[in-house]
Structure formats: structure tokens, C-alpha cells
Image (cartoon, rainbow, N blue to C red; front, top):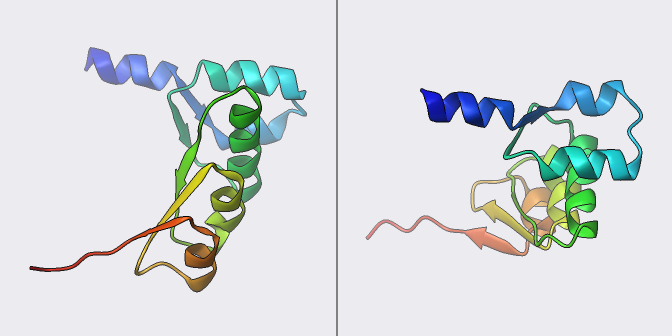
Length: 101
């Protein structure tokens, strides 16, 4: 439970990103303290990825829907799955396949 509470303190949700016009540096500070991003719009996802990359992080993003395409393109490594939408697969660098043995 204590680990969950620590993680929740490091959570950055979409509305705070959208609700304020954060300067690039201010958003960079917020992302540096964050371990988990939740309820982000497609624009939020892309913006957070661009800020992290500008700060020198190597960023991977996994997505399977149309709304994930901009973030998949913005990431250093975009990952999708075989059952994803066509645009998500086209935007990804890597597509995971499930092959039953």
C-alpha cells in the first residue's frame, strides 16, 4: 500500500497539463518528478514525450489506437500490436505479434 501511495504522488494526470498553459521548462520539471502519466489526451501524450526527449530521455511509447499515432511518431521508439489500428501500426517502429506455439 505504501508503494502505491508513493506512486500516486508521482502521478501526472491530463487535466493539470491542459488546465494551465505550462511553459516548456515548467512542464519539464513536472515530468521529471513523474513516474506515471494517466488520462492524457493525444496532444498531452505527444507534448509530454517531446518534453522528455528534449530533456535527454530516450522515450518509448506503446499504443494501439488512432489517438496514439502522434505520440508513437514523437517517441524514440513507438511500439504497437498486431491488432492495433492501421494508423497506429504505420506510426510504430515496432509491432508486437502474438504467435501461439
